[in-house]
Every structure is written in C-alpha cells, then in structure tokens.
Length: 347
Image (tube, rainbow, N blue to C red; front, side, top):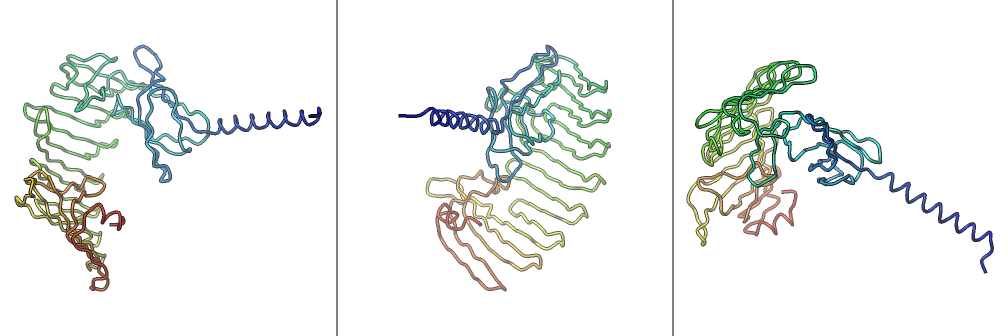
C-alpha cells in the first residue's frame, strides 16, 4: 500500500520530468521565414526556402515549406528563397535557442522563379507580369532597379543600383546575345561578360577585376570548350586552362597541379567517347609528389573534365603513383574507380 508521502514524491518526480522535457524542447533551434508582400502588406509564413549552415560540423541543408524548420544548432546561415533566387539577404546569425523568425521585406519588382525544370524566371511587379518600362525604389528614395520588359522578360535593358545611387549591374539584351557589366559599391568595375545565345547560352567571354583594376579572371566558352586565365592580386598567373590542358600555380609561380587529357575520338564498346586524363601534383619547389591517370566515359566530344564538380568523376583508374624525394612510394594500376576511391578517399 502506497503512503501519502510516497504518492506526493511520485507526483513531484512526474512534474519535474515534464518540466525537464518542456525545457529541452524549448532549447531546440527552430527557424521560420516570414515574407512581407510590399503591395498588400500580407505576411507569408509558409514560404519555400533553403537554409545552408556555414559551420563545418553541420552538414545538413534545410528545406522549408510549411511552418518552422528544426536546426541542429545555432550559428550562421545563408538563406535562399526559392521563388526569389536573387533576393539580397545578409548572412543570418542565430545565437539563441528557441524559435528564430526572419522577416524579409520583398521588393515590388523582382525576378520570380516557379521552381519548374529549366525555369529561367521572369520579372514581376506586385506579383504580376510586366509589360513596358518599370522601376522600383529603396526606402531612401534612390532607384533600386529599372528596365524595359515584355511579358516579364527583359526586352533590351535592365539596370540595378546600390542604395548610394551607384550602378550595381547593367544588362543589355541584343538579338543574338547579351552584355553584362557589374560594379562594386564604390563604382569599381568588377565584371564584364559577353554572352552568345538569346534563349540558351551557347558561348561567352567574361572578365573579372580586382578593386584596383587588375585582371582577376578571363574565361571564355565556345561549345563545350572552356578557356581560362586567372591571376593572383599581384598579377602572377594562378590558373591556365586551354583546349586539353589545365595548370594551377602557387604564388611563387611554381606549378601546383596540372591536368592533361587526350582530345581524340576514342570510344568504348558501346560507342561512348572516352577521355583519358593525367593529373600531376607538385610541391612549392616544383618537385612532383603524385601522378594519377584515369578514364572518363560518355563525355561530349570534344570535351574537357568537369572542373566545376566537387571531384572529377573517373570511371577507371589506369595508374596512381606517389613520390618522395623522386622515388615511387605508392603505386596502383588498373582498378575500378569506385573501389579505388573507397580505398583511398584522400585522392
């Protein structure tokens, strides 16, 4: 038989456990986006967004559609609004647990994206498609954006500005291409691009500049071939890519990594083209430290390895060697790439 003291103790323990549970629940980090529509003042709390944590320990990518999203921890986050991909949102700093609500005041004029496959977006004003000239302004009265439109697409020109009134970006559309110029908030030119192709990009030439006017990058594309020359701030060559070669350099002008590939019509049994790539790695004194040769199947001829990817996707490892003081200390030949990279993930 339970006495009164024991019953009170059990009730107290239950109450404490309930309070502890609620306390732990409250300590969780949750994020919610509110979008304020400028023309109606309506607040959208169910917004389609993606949140990217900047901390190395958090490898998640958070997607939100309805209500709040639970986060692993506090920290810095980059927010992407899926229907307004070019929204200018600073890094969001969440420092406390509980619910964090970020309010985004959407401008009247912006580029809307539906999320459909190959959607290139179109400009809307108060969420309606635009025909003819339209402009939008910052709260301080300075022009934010102005352009000429046809069914939400830029007809011939679009100019965006900083809050100080200086031009941020100039976009000109022509019959068979477009021209883009970008500037920093002090008026220094940072980029020039000539694009070929009206509906789909088939080629381009672009230049990027450091704030002092020195060339930072020259990059061009013609068909599947990309040419690059990039420089350090002191003018020393950092990267050079040609039709079938790519070399990265240290700041002392010594080779860092080089790639060479055979640009010829080699095919496998199924008729798919094969690209054979050789990669060499060097130390700052110019000594070779590693050499790797692999094959890539089904590339577009004439083509190049996909250097934009996190890692080049090889289909077969022909050979892999590592060197110390000019001598081979590691060697592998003829291995399936999946087996190789599972066994040697650091490569």
